[in-house]
Image (cartoon, rainbow, N blue to C red; front, side, top):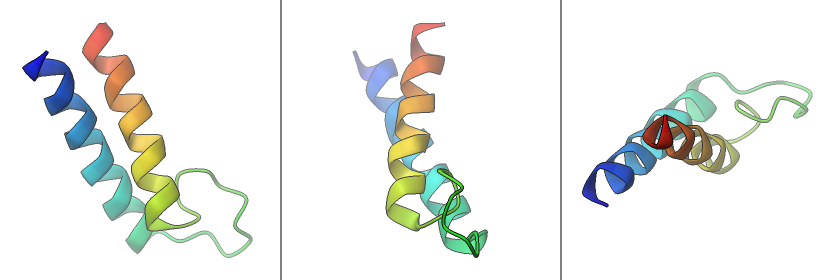
Amino acid sequence: MIKTVGFVLAGAVIGGIIGYFGQCSSGTCPLTSSPYSGAIYGAIVGLLFAFV
């Protein structure tokens, strides 16, 4: 359980950072359109990594 939460939090932080610094001008990129969507997308990817 701790491992899963760690991966989700790490994914959310990394996704949020990428969303903040790499903003897409059109807003169509799910990872880089905003920090919030980047964090959500990163958390989902982190969850997938936790189960692999």
